[in-house]
Image (tube, rainbow over all chains, first blue to last red; front, side, top):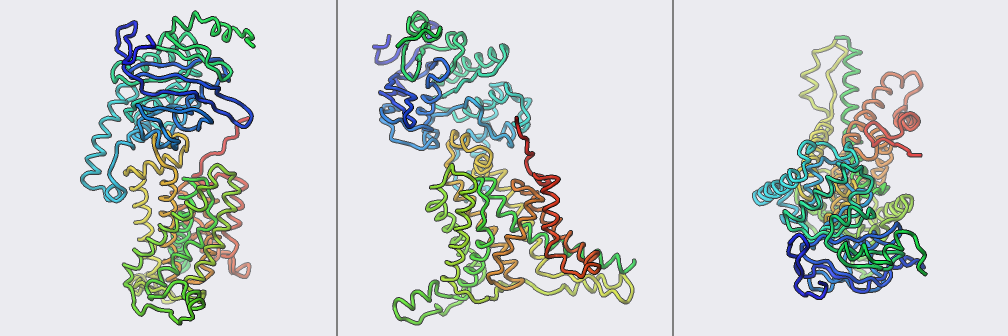
Length: 272
Length: 331
């Protein structure tokens, strides 16, 4: 399966395309601490790719490398067939990589709609003066982008809280608004950092459904981090397993599930 | 109507109007603090610098003429032309934008992520630096600023209201300049609110004020927004500088209006634009009314300390101010 240059077909018959993002020998150090050690893997167009591992395995660090928040100490990031130079996170976002955060980073003082609209900023091209004077093109642009935002809001079933300030929402809904904001950017790659952390069973089911629907409806490529094994295995097409900063497994959920190293890591067996 | 009541009303109205000027200065602080968490000590000096630049450009003064003359042995001071007020204001806005860009480029971007106290110290340095640059550029003598704003009491209002009281009451004395300042401040605040609510850059500005990480993740350049915010604060400083400079001349003491903005911020909260306005009005009215009612009993001059005592009371009983974000400490 992995040898196939032009992608593969999943068990449920979805066509997965070529490589969107490739991490080549990524190492990340903070002073003397090695958070990621020589990890390589790829993310293919249209797939749901999971990165799993026990706490402290370096999953979030890896996501931060992909989204540009961390700069790898060694290794290369290849995005859409080109080697990516060292970029500020906002430039990475402008290239079409949207993300959510483990601890939710929303604009608490702004309404849900305004939050989702910030996701559209990259698609609004009119300049400062046109915007300030609110003329022609700027206005038309606002209308078009507003429509996309409303569509995403409908899709994630948060119409009833459109005008509510985000700070007042319960945790589960905040997570959904964050997903909506990322989705509004119409990303080429969507990164989800523990999208189900801290949720109850019902909320987890909702979130799983939304992730699958997003992938299905918009064909969005998704990379997600999760430490709840059960959820990940049901959701994802391929899984990278990390432990102590190293990659210990990579493959379909079934392959990974039967990997002895992965089993050991999750059961806490010492492997040095 | 009893005269005493009419006098009090006059004091109240004048208090509101001086409050508007306090609010203008406080507004500059709030803008930068909200967007970057920096308490910009240099805001007052920025008002001074903006006013000096405006006067200098209008009079066709050669910037840095003392240095130029000392180095090249020349004796030039003026270009020999006068720039109309409107054009001079536009040019000064340009200078303030350039200043914002330089501050961001040379100072603030190197201090991202530092402790608030370090950022604060940096702005103190900036204040003294800018003060020196203002003197070098335009000279340190007191300058008259006249861009054609009406000054002096409004006879019209005085005549209209003279009949309200007894013969001892001559009508309300209200300064024309104060009225202009009120209108300008109202326009400025309306403009700022519209800009931040309905434009792409305004939305990005609010986003940055709310959460830096999240702003980055949707593709907003923090540097760009900070330059924008410092530019807007520079513009607000210019407006404040024009109003205060027209009133009492462009001189060093203009930069001390920043000290008057501090109690306003204590009242209104450091993060609230409506707070800055209401806080300014309360301080303006409060100090004038206090002087009117209590001043004569304690020998006057209460205006010098009233605002600070009020701010102190707020610090004790409501440290987040009237509209500031609630301080909730999690344990």
